[in-house]
Length: 256
Image (cartoon, rainbow, N blue to C red; front, side):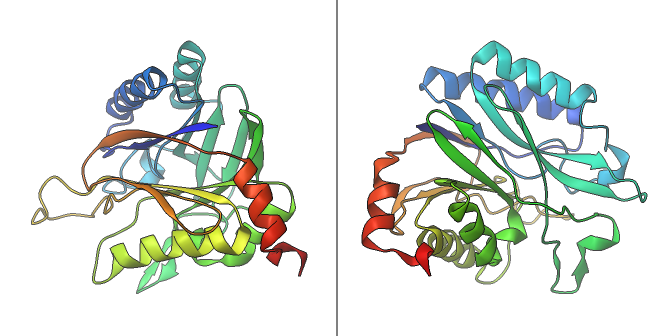
């Protein structure tokens, strides 16, 4: 399975971000990727209120992403915002291409003085999908701090775990990002593909940050296979799913 880490820096206009998706998917396709993973909030940066851009899951932005996937022959995983029934939004991962799925972020970032649950409604179920001969489990940002989500996905057959994030910078945050991705790979004896928003163009610029970059792919035994820089970049990693079966045989933590 060849997976592209599509580390972009989302802007505040969804139409501009569609162009970023199209360019990154074209690059991923040239590199032979089966799946292209984008960050949380691909549709619109958190510098803008998500409620201003939220739309139905079959709305125009998602439909445009589906067309990009169809034309490129690449399955896309990308973050968007979908209106919830209670006036909030869902922080959603759209999967489209050879497979289709929807994951609404379960664990909301009510931490460090911030309450994501004020404007985001939580998802209620784990989601995985089939692609390129394997099964991929979905998670978003703060989910990475909850090992049981990854263990449950693995027990349900997922071999690759996606973490789509807009990981705010701060003291120790890059180390936490890397450590958590490696830990979840070892907890679930699965590959982890963790894709973050690229860092801000100007670190001194005011306003909400987008991410720290440093997207990475981790083996089922915790080895970092690839790690990107802080700026926009598309890189493709080849994941040998036989390594998952081997790890689960030799380190049978999922049987506990």
